[in-house]
Image 1 (cartoon, one colour):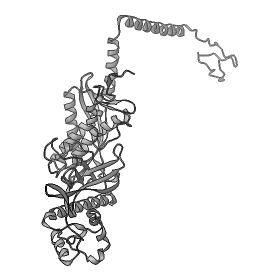
Image 2 (spheres, one colour):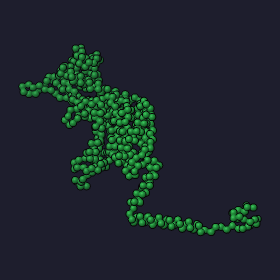
Image 3 (cartoon, rainbow, N blue to C red):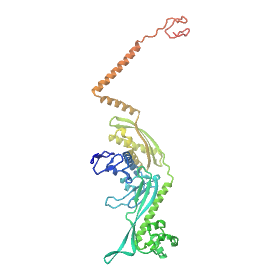
Image 4 (cartoon, rainbow, N blue to C red):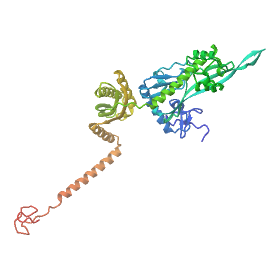
Length: 456
């Protein structure tokens, strides 16, 4: 293999630059195709071309799932988790920044990130959910005689980043890790531990939470980590306890820590409740069968038949759903005909037909639940017309030599048939005796005697 051998994308066929693209287990992937993959997909090197093609197809179908998404809850400031409790699904993005150096926007609805095509994950695909709080720290020093020296006791600034970690059973995603807070929560340690009632009352005021009896948390006071303390007992925060002074300087940090801690607890509770809750009964499907004329660019007007199943949430009944769906689908099929699409390609336009359904349904306040079993095939008259035109096209495409050979074969077949019919016509008829050899009665040309019934 040459060192600088040119490569092509095994998915789209585009050329890949010398330092561009990704290596697959059995091929190559260009940057443009890689950008279309899920941001939570990390194992590109082990992926096959077939699995990448399947993922890209699912990513296109994911746009339809996003169109039906209805936000009920949203979490996070840096990344975001958006939940649709009614459909029991969620989506997540790793960074809500509008640009590389732009400000992050507050995400409150799926419509704000729908252009990112975040993967819609079902709650029944979640295998585990946890919160990871990453703690870092640095020592703050004072300047004495022009030099940086430690405080006594030391002043330590603790910083905390909160992550929601969701593990899923998904065809190409294993773990979703979302950073929840934009800026790290900062809480300084600037004093020795002190436990007293005044500190308890101050912590209660700052956190707006009831403080437990300090005697019941005696063992926890020996822990130096605020992360471990709040995870074990988030209500115990007396003044100077664990070395964290409840002063104006760290009041905001303590409150922010409590805010994110409650957020993570709500995420855990929401996911666990949705996994444990029984799935809502799905709406029954409405079968649709409709003949329609279609202007095909190759065969002219064909009689086609549409068949599919549609289900939606509507109080007006199945007949209303059927009418709206059938009208929307046939209108979109006529648009496809105007674009010069072959009748053979119509079944592959399921995503576009689904989008037309969702648009028509949303205009009359119907929520599309399912669109399946799509079939678009020629009817009996359409099949006959296609067969006849294909025969004519096959003849028209023959060269003079092929035409002469075909005519010669036809003439041979006609001559053989004529010879066979002539031979049968010249075959002498069996003679019948004038008198019955059994009883002597005169015969009348029949095969059996009219008197005794003997065979002649």
